[in-house]
Image 1 (cartoon, rainbow, N blue to C red):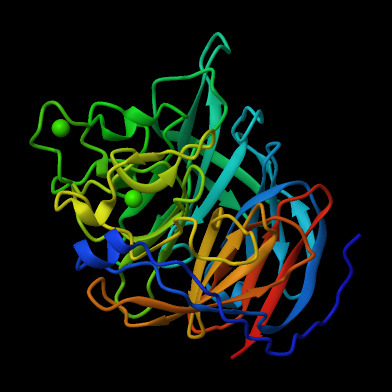
Image 2: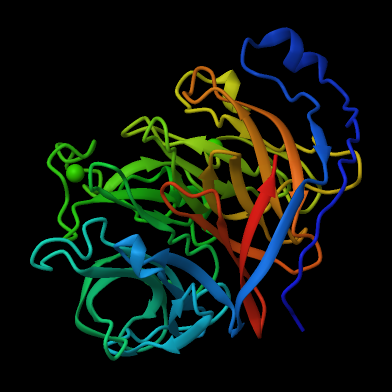
Amino acid sequence: MFSPRNRSHAFNARRVLLPIFAVVAVACAAPTPNGIEVDEGSYSAHEVVGGLERPWGLDFLRPQSADQALVTERAGGLQLIDLAEGTRQAVGGEVPEVVARGQGGMLDVAVHPEYGEGDGENDWIYLTYSGANDNGSGYATHLGRARFNPDDASLFDFEVLYVAEPFHSQTGHFGSRIIFDTDGYLYMTSGDRRERDSAQDLSSNWGKIFRFHDDGSIPDDNPFVGDPDALDAIYTYGHRNPQGLAIHPQTGDLWQNEHGERDGDEINIIDTPGGNYGWPVAVYDREYVGGAAIGDLPHERDDIINPIYWWDGTRYDDGQSGFPPSGMAFTNDGLFMGNLANQYLGWFHLDGTERSSAEVTGESRILGGYGRVRDVRSRENSDALYVLIDADDAPLLRVTVEP
Ligand SMILES: [Ca+2]
Ligand SMILES: [Ca+2]
């Protein structure tokens, strides 16, 4: 179905004309939805490997000279990919058992930032997945890690580090993106499991972003360690279903995206420990049925950490509803996010790097026609993007853009 190809698109700017809500423009100093330029960006794409089964997450082995990556497959597989040779090998050994139902399965993968250094004590591979309870009646997002033997592509010494309990028969909104920051902390997202009020409940693991040490222990300075009524792993709360995390290459800030209900998709900077990011009490989302607003608007409340960019139904004039996002990555060319329902890779042009200044100034739509874009990753000192398409018999693509 997919074959190596090169494409480029001519610049085709199209002004997006938007209605302005008078109440927003008058009442608030917060940024208001403004039209941005949307165009088709120029890029080239090359298929590194094909034949992946519903791939979900990717990370690179270290050192970079190894030129290898690990890719998860939602049904439970893990693939070792030689990026230079364009070959892949199924990883065996202690790969955890997953429940691939609904949105669940083998989800994200992260390689320890000091993998391949020193005596190998940090040679750990981290995985997130939906796993079942003992009687198989419910599922929860799990975080585990294992050692990796590249010689025979096998995992060993697997251990579970965290389970976002309770187990729930619902098979949606597992969240589960993971990433290390530049200080070596491990962040993990957890979706609301379609129990929206749980995102505001600090005794619940749902609708949260967690922060761990690399061994799964909880840092003493996590914001709720001193609060007996709040879970110590929680770093931020009020999230619906976050499925994208990336570290900003200049600031080191953790950036995140999450799915809204109808519209309400967001790009956030996770720079406020203990912060309430709004779901479902202050969001731009509307109900799927009937379209009623959900809660207050974030910029109307001073106790809510506002997204730096969001979709509220006014963004596009071509009928596209929001930007249902998945994985995200930065390069020197901007911010890239997979779009699931609309099946392209969003390339967001940015001005500014900090919360106070960061602004999305334009969007280019690339990789249209390949399918739902599940994950995108980049490596240090490289502007090449590696992109996973959410399909049976799917490719891993290497993509470069032409600014
Ligand atoms: Ca606590
Ligand atoms: Ca929010």
